[in-house]
Amino acid sequence: MFIYGYKTFYIAPEQVTSKDYAYHFALIAEESDNDYWRLIEQGAKRTAQENDVYLEYVAPKKADNSKMLKLLDRMISAKVDGIITQGIEGQRFIDLVHKGIERGIPIITIDTDVERSERKVYVGTDNFYAGQLAGKSIITNTVGDQYVGIITGRFDAINQQERIAGFKHAVESFERIHIVDSRESNITEIGATQAAYSLLKQYPKMNALIGTSALDGIGIVNAVREITPNEDIFITAFDVLPETLDLVEEGFIDATIAQYPKEMGAKAVEVMVELQTKNVLENKKYTDTKIIQMKDMATDPGGVK
Image 1 (cartoon, rainbow, N blue to C red):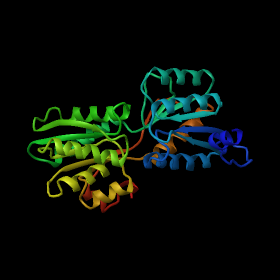
Image 2: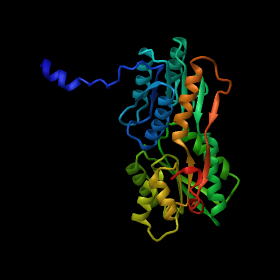
Image 3: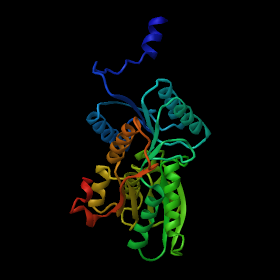
Image 4: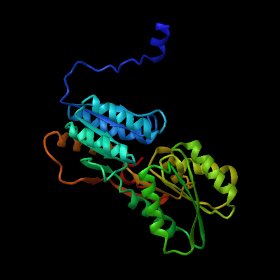
């Protein structure tokens, strides 16, 4: 029984060199192997190495707010020098941030903000503005009535809510643009495919689809290819994952809203290093956001490819 329990529950510790680091930071991601979060990790680790920081990347295997909150509590108890985490809606997150700050641990939100918390700084996209850009892409590139389906990563994610709100604000004065329905993808490609498939089957008039998380655009293309390969569906995606950019270049995705996760990770570590010795005056540090279309790909804008 003892041996069985040991082999079942023992987790091998991460191998860390004996070098003394200046600081130990934790980066708490939404999902461990999500491509978008791995790009944030890459940018963060590069800057961490440049600043003699040991960066610990932790995340639930699948997106789960309760597990993220447990990880946040665990990192506070571990007395790390700083925590970079996705913001999570709810009082429990606010209480944990307060607990961390009380214990002298600066906490930064990344990708998703919770302004009501005592977090020191938010680093990432202005998500409301990003949603407005998605609306602009449909307004300027379509004519006639547009029946829009929205695929969003998670209904309970603040950044997704803000992007949808920005999109709705951008299109609300255009009577020809009709938001028909929305579905959740659970921030997975297969989830986005299933969600888009469901919308297209239920609403045959739908001629525009927008995805608000990194894998949604890829999933939408999969569904469109299967159900309506000959129909002209205007597709707006999110993020600049290599496969998304390939689909833009090939004309399957009409536009994608580019945000730069490596830049987010790098900037968050820079700010956290600064917070070790002084307060940062700006409590929001927005990273770049723009619309990328096929015509932009020839010039490789912003080094996205």
